[in-house]
Each structure stands twice: as C-alpha cells, then as structure tokens.
Length: 337
Image (cartoon, rainbow, N blue to C red; front, side, top):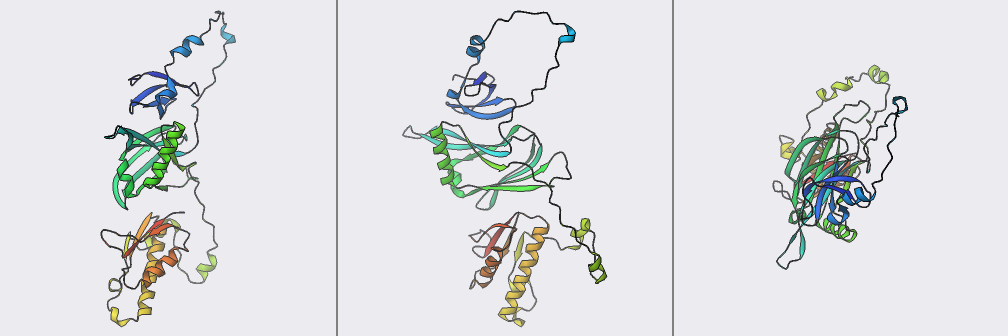
C-alpha cells in the first residue's frame, strides 16, 4: 500500500496540502484538507516532498525592526461550496470472475456552511424505519453516518433529516426537514458517471442555506372579538387543539356508534370531515407524515381522499401501496412546504 493513515499528502489539481485519515480500498483513501474530509483516488494525490524540494528557494535573511512588522491577516478556511450534502462513497470488491463490483456505500453528512446544526437522521426501507441517529455537526466538517449494502438499494431507501440550529436565532426557522428517496437504478447510474470521470464519490444537496422563519401575516382581530368569536393566545393555540394522530382509522364503525343509522352519502361525509380534521391537525403540529386507513371496498373513500390530497399545497407526496399492517387499505401522506 502506497499510503498509510497519517501520511501527509498534496492534492494534485489544487496544490492543497492535507493528510490521509482512512484507507478505503486499494484505489481510494479518505483525506482531510483544512478540516474537511473527502475521498480521493490515489492517482489524484501525491506526497508533498517533491513540491517542497522543487519549489524551495533560498532567501537572504534580512534584519527586521519591531516597528516594521506587519500584522498577520487571518487566513480562515477555504470553502469548497455552500450547503449541506449527503455524500456516498462506493466501496468496491471482486466477484467470482475477478470483476470489480460495488459491495457497499459509505454515507457521510457534509456541512460546507459555517453554521452548526443539530440533526436527526432516519433511514427507512419500504416506509419502515431501519436506522436512527441524533447528533450534531459543526461548520465546515463532515459526519460519518453508516454503511449501506448495495443490494439493499432495491428496497427504495428513504434518507430523512430534521435540522435545527445549535446557536438559536429568532429570525431563523426553529427546525426544518429534508428527505431524499433513491432507487437502485439512480445509484447505479451515478456510479457509472463517477467511474467515467474518475471521481471517488457523489453527493446530493439537502439544502444550501438554513431557512428564515416565516412570519405569519398579522390580522386585525378586533372585529372578530366584537362579533363574539373566542380569542386565544397564539403561543397557547396547541393547548386548545385536539392532539394529532399519525394513524387515523376512517372506518365508519370507528367514528359513530350506530353506522346503520346513516346513509352511504352521510357516511362518506363523516369520513371526509374526519380526514380533513386530522390532516389540518397534522399540519399545525408539524408532522412529517400521517397514515389514513380507508379500507379497500369500492374505492370511493380512497378516491375522494386522493383527489383532495392532490390539491393541498402542504402535501409533498402520498402513496397507496402494500403495508404490513393495513394491506392496500391505507394511504400514507408525506407533509412539507
């Protein structure tokens, strides 16, 4: 092996100096440059000794008086980009035919911003949680998340993050979420692209800058109060709301005591009202997802719910697929801005 952990190196295309922090495989290493870690192929780096000897110049020593010494300017760290990214590094192996294949992917969270963040991370397969992590990431650093087997990418992984500022800022959002859903074909195409470009990894941007807090428009409530409407303090609004639910069963026997007393049209209206109620509660309580159990039947309730979901701006996506608890009789709704 040409390099070992701790070796000083130089990046050939930029002349940046760094060191080796990890041996990934026989072609790739993890390097650290100015506090930022990233993978590199071994032919993209070299030992710095040739540069040191070839560029070293003999400078005549000169006396410097105290009043001639200039104040040194702070150099600061060099920013590669802006934003927070999830970085995937393919780790290769040989198959029985001695061909190079991807065995797994190493996942890193990379923060190119100077802000520090708390984050919650969840990896799910087919909408079932597989791995969870809570931690923080400082500015201009990276954070190793975990490895994921390449064969597991066929299970439609979803990488879900919730970010918040470590240093509180009242002008910034209290938290916000980002999700990334990838398919095996997408990953395979990306790997082909980086192999052609001789690049060691690929990234997806989660966000560029942490979002500002959205100020709600002010409303003159005097007229509403005079009209007899009850007024509540905005800070205590949740005290007067029913608690949200992540799973809402819309079967009529769960909603009324005597379902046979209602016509089909009345039953559908009751179910839709319940759907609207808990959808709005989910939005107000900042839920990221909610499941509505509508059953299979003739599909009238399901179709009505799907039509309404398609018109709601707070819906990022929704899916009616097989669930191990509800079969095909439920729709999962993912919420966002």
